Amino acid sequence: MLTKRSIVALAAAALVGSGAMPASPANATTNVSASMGSLPACVDIWHNSGWVTQTVYIKNTCSRRVGYVVEIAVIPDSHCIEVPRGKTKKYNWGKAWRWDGVHKCL
Image (cartoon, one colour):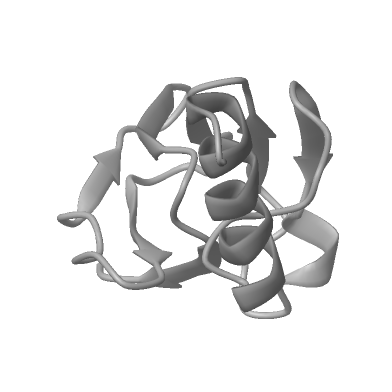
């Protein structure tokens, strides 16, 4: 007989195996600016994966404002996040959905 705990464990294993849920450890932070070729050198973007949510931070040290859309698998992408010069903005969503990157919107 399956217990509630074993059903949850099976469901989580299925999500990780399907790619819908990341297999990364909790509270992992990744600086992704270098891996995204279209970003200007004055923009830093990093991703943090916590126990319940994921967050993308966009730091703008350019002389003008920038705007990016956060791409998320399965659910709708973020709105255009405008980041004024010298500021940092963040966008977060549930842990179950994979982060696919960012693209410019301004």
